[in-house]
Length: 253
Image (cartoon, rainbow, N blue to C red; front, side, top):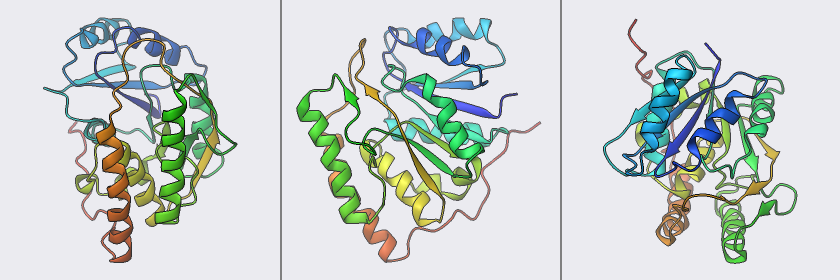
């Protein structure tokens, strides 16, 4: 079994899903993939199930009963990975906005360089975003500046969704107490990893806006992030961010 699992949440990604799976599996480094599908009406899950016949030991799917939010999809995937023996757990989008060729770079930051979390960062060297509307670029860029100001978190791209976690990070964060679902979920996971003492590295990547399918971003997600950041800072000040005491359930043999 590979030591790494790439978690890809999906909702209506039929145009992208087969290509992203095949591209990841073509990499020299071996990665497994877990698709967490939120009952996509376009048949995304059916495409994945067919591909599982070709990749029975590398490709897996968890099908949920509705559109329950990005954060809960990742938490579902994290717990699935922790029930098994994966040492490195990745977050990645299905739409090629995250370049699969960067997966080994994130892996090396954790496996070779000793970091606990590696972030595929759009903003550690200027703004590396292609084909995004300027308004969205500015909103995302200044959202990360705002997070740095409020939380004192020394990360340039706090809302990034392209990441590698060492297993011990996800075992230590209490996933049952993660509060947010959208952009703020990404901030919360990074902030709690930082508060709990883990080493974080930003790896420079180029983010390319999706060519196929529809973005799931909404103004409500930004609102959640704006107010959620203040809440996170308050929890840190009041000592409410604590490591999980109970281990996550393991898959019974």
